[in-house]
Amino acid sequence: MAAASFYYLAAASLVLLCCLAWLTTLLTLPGNWLVVGLAALFAWWFPVEAGRGIAWQTVGIAAALAGGGELIELTAGAAGAAKHGASRRAVVLSLLGAMLGSLAGLFVGLPIPILGPLIVAVFGGAAGAFAGAYIGETWKGRTESEKIAAGHGAFMGRIWGTLGKLAIGAVIVALVAIDAFI
Image (cartoon, rainbow, N blue to C red; front, side, top):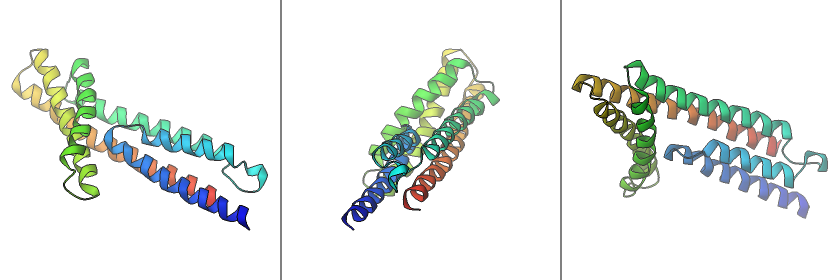
């Protein structure tokens, strides 16, 4: 009985940690990969062969999904800027700006309880992507309308990329939770 109680406490802790790791995606951190890492540790500590645990196939599927989430995020952000004719420099600076903007947004949103930092981090990341693309296009000597178009594309691409990656992350967390408890 004690072993079963310990397992379910560990599984509940895993799901909680996975949810927290998943939320770090909002800060441009590798939240989905953290969830995969937690699932792998759990699969190692609690092998299915021992009666309970997470199957290594689940970890593999989660890793494949996390890779897909990264692809969606990068493609959406880069495609958004490139769609409006942004240079490679603008695309790279938009990615850097997204990271810095997300971190700045996290701290700006602190006075708003719980969801404030996360919501502001998403929009801070999008604003940072806009600023990075705008600076990159300024550096290339583009016109004002080209700079704004590239920035707008990077902004919208960042929003859609983050939402896509979050959706895939939610599927990964659900997959891990289901395998841990069923």
